[in-house]
Amino acid sequence: MRLRIDLKIFVFLLLFYLTKQIEIYSTIMFFCILHELGHICMGIILGLKPEKIEIMPFGLSVAFKLNTKDYNKKIKNANLLELKKIVIAIAGPITNLIIILFYIFLNKSEINIIYANLLIMLFNIIPIFPLDGGRILKSIIHIFWGYTKSIECIHIFSNITIIVLTLISSIVILKIHNIAILIILIYLWTLVIKENKRYENVKQFLEK
Image (cartoon, one colour):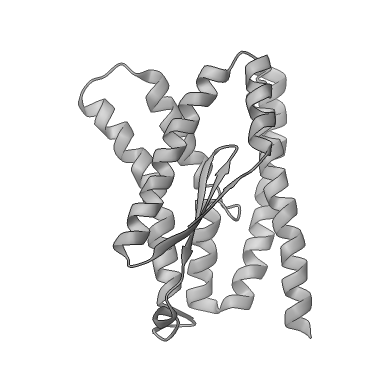
């Protein structure tokens, strides 16, 4: 299994340290790791093996070694692998939801922990690929309408979503002057721009 560190994490550490929000960032990172462990555990349960783990600015990212047999089991216009991807993607936000419910059930006044997990859960269900929400939406479209339609639709959804979030975030930043929102927004834009380039390459390949 390969391990990779995204060097942008050091930039984020510095920014949060300078803005005196390093404690909040550390809390979010801890629960982001638990979030990703939810993905890993579900992947293993479904018979997949972790192939690569990447340490990113907001937690971990795991890639699984795919089973050839999953490609041979058809589900409408896709295969069993897409269904497994949906279940694995859902496992992360559910992990954060379980943590939230656990603290509420115990009547713990850990507002920061509940807030951190709520933020992580909501952040990851945003329909931007490759966040969990984007992955889930892409795989659902793939199952019902095929691969080509899935990459076209998620490309559109991701771009519309980031534009709407930018407009909303701009208003919020002006109101509360929170640099953390700006940092998260910049991170989301880097994801969208990266996926847009990948989409153009895939589109050119499919048109050949």
